[in-house]
Image 1 (cartoon, rainbow, N blue to C red):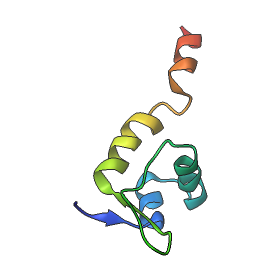
Image 2: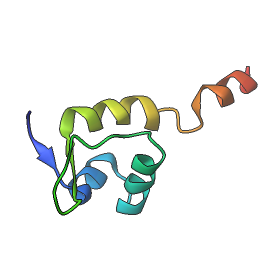
Image 3: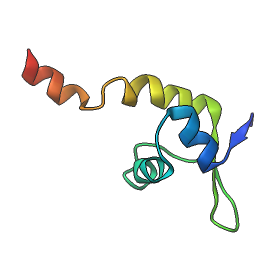
Length: 69
């Protein structure tokens, strides 16, 4: 399954706060690879890097880009 990161490690990798990361999960923008029996989230590094390259590169989404055109 690859390296699994804690919420704190994932937030640090993305350069965001832990509450921001948790909001992304709650909004369905990011999915943890594993939720432990204690309800702790674990994230795959590959998933986080993909999220960073797509979501964080365009924080306002395509709709904003279309309006700017």
